[in-house]
Image 1 (cartoon, one colour):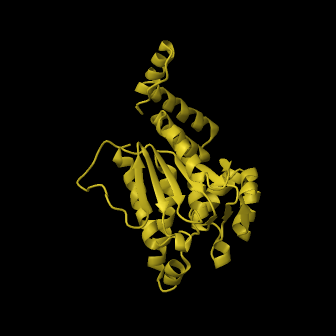
Image 2 (cartoon, helix red, strand yellow):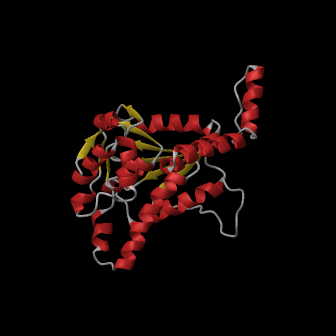
Length: 275
C-alpha cells in the first residue's frame, strides 16, 4: 500500500456496483441480478477506478468479488455493450478493449489477495474476472464459459490466453477458448480452475471465511507472494531465485518477521501488523 496521496480525494460513492468494507475486507457485489450481473461500460470503468484506488486507501487487506441473484457475472451486456460497440469507430473500440484489459491487469497487480465467490454462471468477461482472481470459491452447480468466439471475437480477450494456460495447461485452455463450451464446476476443479468447490448457497460464506483468514494474517508477506507469483511467470530460474532472495532479505527486516519470533518464544499467536 502506498503512503503517499496527492490532491485527488478517494471515491466515496460507487454507482455501478455495491462496495462494502468490513475490518480490512473489501467486497464488490455486482448487482444487476435481472441481467445476471452483465457488465456495462460503466461497471468496467468503476472496476478500473476502484482497483486503481485500492493501493492508496490503506483500509483493504483482501478483496472479494461476488454477484447478487442467480449468477456471479454473465459477461458483457449484449445490448449495452455489443449493441453500442457496433456504432463505434476504431479509436473508441480500442479505448474500450484496453479498459477491459486494464481491469484484469489491476486485479493481478493489486497488492492484496483477490477472492472470487462464484455461483450460477461466470461467462465471458465474468469468467475472466474469476480467472484473474487469486482464489476461486465455486459452488457445485456453477459453470464457466469463455464465450468470446461465440460472438465472433477472439477467444484471447482480457488476458485470458495469458492466464488460462497457466492454470489448466495449453491444451485445455485451447479447448475452452476456441470452442467456448460450458465448463461445469466439478470439471473445472479437476482441471485446476477451482480453489474450493463448495455446496450450493455457501460460496459467499466460505469466501468470507477465507477473506477473514487472509485479512488477519501477515498481509505484507501475502502482497509479496502475489507479486512474485505474477512476476516470475516470465522469468528464468536464476532471475526468479535472485528476486526471491532480495524479497526475503527485505521481509526479514520487517516487524512481522520479528513479531513471529517473539510470539513463538513466548508461546502465543503472532499479532500481525502488515509491516
